[in-house]
Image (cartoon, rainbow, N blue to C red):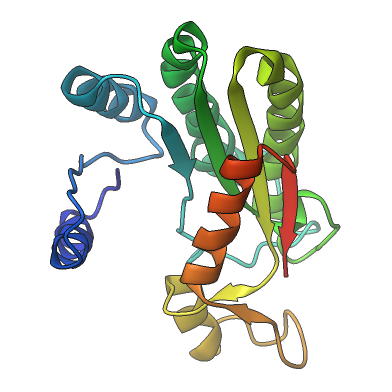
Length: 205
């Protein structure tokens, strides 16, 4: 699920080349109506999913520091980083709970837990989301559903964030080298979280 049809088509082709079946839905994750409609379309076609991963990637508006952040700016960050991830959980949890199995996985920035003033605009809503996810994990744990959060404090290789960093977009935000991680490594950690049903919160840095 993403708003960029071209990117979705490219990902589908890559998966099919590896003999993995794929189906995608176009939706703007900042639009609750589109998020709910896309989740319903997937459920209508495949039923309640076994695993859902929410991993938004738009960071082009960063950095926005704590001093710079005002209420009007913050409101523009809430849909992608708080409202839609909760709406997606609302959409799939009833089916998972009825079935007695499932996993909800979320990718957050490390600023959801660690104070990073230059990343306040994303850190503030994601801190609220992390609180929600940890509470949700505690509530559904006894019903066969796992909720896990990965706090990513490294640049993901081949990502838009890595490209922006290498272009100098974040010059002055952090001096020195920043850790990097391959997406396949993150995928492996997510797999282990679902397999082991533990831990509910992982720092990837």
